[in-house]
Length: 252
Image (cartoon, helix red, strand yellow):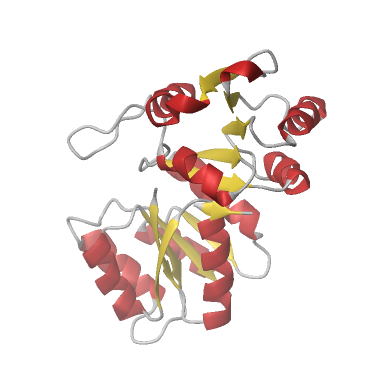
């Protein structure tokens, strides 16, 4: 699960962004001021940082400057998020090495999440199951620094997430009572019909499949390699993931 550090002093905004990003599949740590944000970055070595500009103790530009001079964190992707969004602010952020600049109030949370995914090369997997307990073993197989796993348990929300959230892969737990309806709705959706699907089913359900099939008794062994293959990712080795050529848990 990718680790994201959110440095934002507005508590209301912090809660909104933390909740949304966790729903997208990120593990989110937070900091309320610039100095603490820099300290937290050095402690947890996040996969990316979402950084406000106007912060107590140390503004976002100074935090970014110190991050870029830190040999451990210098390559960590940093995305700026601020009410200050003048051309000068954007130019300064770019000059200091920010990957992207998001203006508060005009940047939608869904667009922010998708820009982060595209820039950092993260892959999103949408898991549909009957409940959180049934989804848990599936979600555990997706633990990978480049994989965002998000779970949906309600049919109408699942279709909406598949259409607006642009997942790279969908896993359908065929043991859920509405799985057949979901597959039919995904096939009929212009926005979701091309998304690859992996189905998890009991042996007696194998005639009702769409896409790849995994036996429900082999979730722990068969889901992960198939997911990584479909996403173009390699297994983690020596503590670091490999990926096929690309730039660089959640609840509904």
